[in-house]
Image (cartoon, rainbow, N blue to C red; front, side):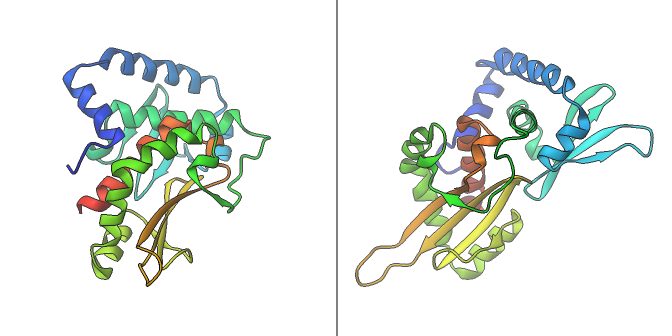
Length: 224
């Protein structure tokens, strides 16, 4: 692990038992909360996939190149890959589903209008956090060489975009895209990287969740 990203700090504390009961209690609270929401509403507002043809009703929630499954009888959340099978990540998945459902009727759809993290709700927290080690790791990722950058981006579901000299868009969840962009250095300016979110991001994830998810992605891109 390079440095300490927000997500990994949560996981470390979870494994050490620090605040573990609080995280478990929060997960249980969110499970009870999601039970009170119509599954069809969740599927429509979060772009999850309802499955029930085999008699076992469930929702499949895409996550980067993997997915989570929310069983509806009884309610429980399962990760497809062990790397994501943590209480912390499950909390983030449930927050995505609940926040999307609660914001239906507002500007909940992805607008394809990109903004700086500081422009989001409580965005100053995001900006201050990313100004530290996260941006250094993002620069390191883009500096890894063209072939390596493309391979790493594709591994995590990145799609090339038209921003900067090099840029990729990643879908953390179906309605929660993040754009990672890089400009090469020239005679006037040094190399520069940037993180952008869709203007609707706050309708799908609280600020601390955006921080943890973006840190998770950038650290994995920098490590591979």
